[in-house]
Image (cartoon, rainbow, N blue to C red; front, side, top):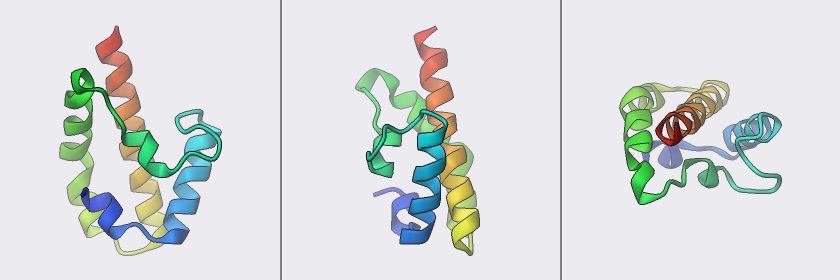
Length: 86
């Protein structure tokens, strides 16, 4: 399990899911985990996001910062997948 979901609180999850839905990264009523689902060919996108964000996530101390980091990590995955698709 990723450090993000080990640390995720209900409040941080609610904030992150709402923002990612608003941005179109997460479908309505989809759980946060769906923002990080990748195909085997897209695995590099997830690894890049982990490298960029997991240390910061591990150090986060409150719901707001955890939500912001979850959003940033999901955006990173989304952007990397888009770049892979050309």
